[in-house]
Length: 94
Image 1 (cartoon, rainbow, N blue to C red):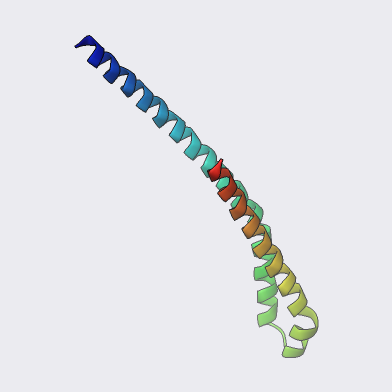
Image 2: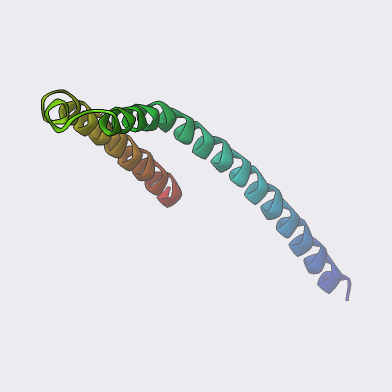
């Protein structure tokens, strides 16, 4: 009988340890996600600024000046987002 209680107690301790580890992992993941999101904000802002400029310009100015800048901002944002997503996919497999 005491062996049965011991196993139950040991299992309970292991579950509590796992609960603490999961909680710690979730906190670290939340922090990492926040850092990645903050790193993307300037690129998103640049793309939004180019789009705002587009709304205020003529078709000629769009082709000559703004289109290349908007395309570059979009490509940088897209690349950064994909890199961030890839880092999280890699981390979750480890």
